[in-house]
Image (cartoon, rainbow, N blue to C red; front, side, top):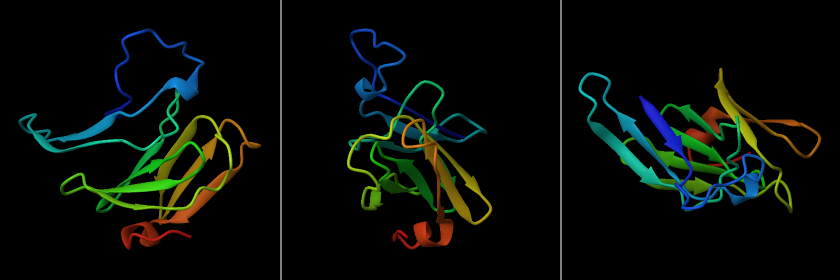
Length: 130
């Protein structure tokens, strides 16, 4: 079972101040005994936000979507960062929503015209981007 989230903050953050959500991390738990199997930190600026899930899981990779549309990949065996794609925008696109669907990762944002983006999961598994 996988779980992820932003860093805990000392001061309350307005639920609508998405740009203030920073860092965070992830963990994979063994569902049979609850032990941590993999964990890692996000130094990247993922596109966190209320109701947004900027992560998708594909075989061998945890994929995170950055504020400017970058795709970050992490190894599911040890949590190590693997690759980063170029951004698709010059400024923040807001909250990301990502999902694995068939042979693709689909992702979109609450800014930038609500455009849906896709990348083949086979490309992600090789560590590249398209």
